[in-house]
Length: 475
Image (spheres, helix red, strand yellow):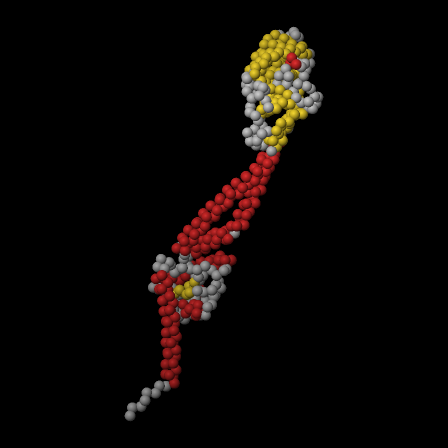
C-alpha cells in the first residue's frame, strides 16, 4: 500500500511562505495592473498629453485660470465700478461747468469800464443764452449827453459824420498827453501838427485800446507797439485808417529835458450806427440805464455820446457796463452735460465690459483646450515655489538614475551602493522607480508608493495630497 505523501513541517512552512509570497506578488501585480489600466484609459482619452511633470506648462495653465477667475471677479464687481465712474463723471462735469460759468460771468460777460470820447457810437451784442440784461451806469461825475438805444436786430453802420477838434498842448519833460476816441471800422483820422519849440521833437502815436497805450508807455522808442508811431518836429500831417471798431488813443510823448508846445488839428471822418429804428431809448436821467435781452433771438444795444459841437473838448465819459446772467442756462447746462456724460460713460462701460467677457470666454476655451493632465495644487498657492524647487532637484536625480539603468548599472534588491539617493526613501531597499502626481516627486519604489496612494497619504517631501502613482519603465 502506498503511503500518503506527508510533507514535513519545514516543507509546509516553505509552501506557506511561497503561497504568501505568491499572493503578495499577485496582489502587487493586480494593483500594478489596475494602475496601468487607469494610465492606459487616461492616455487613450488624452493621447496628446504627457505623463511627466511640466512646470512651465502648469504655470501657464495656472496663469490662464487666475486670469480667467480675475475676469469673473471683475464681472461680479462691475456694478460698484460703474457707480464709481458715475460719481467721478458727476464731479468732473460739475467742476468743468463751474469753471466755465465763472469764466463767462466774471470774464467774457464780466463788469467792464469804458472811457468814451465825443461822437461815440458803441454797439453791444451780448449772447442771449448767457445774458439776461445789460446795465450801463456813469461813474465819477454825471454828465449829460449819453443815450442808450435798444434794437431787435443789429442796426446798420451807414451814417457818416465828420468833425474836427483843435488842441494846443504843452507836454512837460519826460511825460505824455493823450486823448481818447471810440471809432468804428471804416473811419479815418487826419492829424495836422506843429511843434512850436525849435530844435525839439515829440512822439506822436495812435494806439488801439488801453493795452496798446500801456505797451507804448513801457517802451516809447519801440515802433511796433502802436497802430501809428511817428517822431515829429516842425509841421506835418498824419493819416490813419481804422479797420477795427475799438477805442483809440492819440498821444504825444516828450523825452526831452524841457517842455515842448504842440498844436494839433484833428479831422475825423467817422461811421456811426443808425438809431432811427430803435424801439427803446434811455437818456441817463439818473445816471443808469438798463435793457432786458430777448430770448432766444436776442437784441442789440447802442451807446452814443454827443459831438464836439454839443460839448466842450474837455468832456469825456467813463461808464460801467455789467451783464445780468441768465441763471436758468447754467442750471440746465450742468444738468444736460451731466446727463450726456453719464450716458457716454455707461455706454463705454458696457462696451468695455462686453469686450472683457468675450475675451475671458475666448481665453477660457483656449485654456481648457490646452489644460495639462496634472491638476493644480490643492488650495496651497503659497507652497508652489518650494514644491517645484524640490521637484527640480529630484528630477536631476531621476535623470542620473535613468542614465545608470540604461547603461546596465541598475541597483538590485539588497545590493549596497554608494549613491543612497537612488534607493527608496520608505523601505531603503528597492530603487526609486515611480513618481507621484501632482507634485512629481520621485522618492520611493512603486510598491511603497502604491501603498501610500491606497492609504490616501501625502507625499513625504512636500506633503501634498497624492492623486496617482506613475511607474517608470526602463530598458
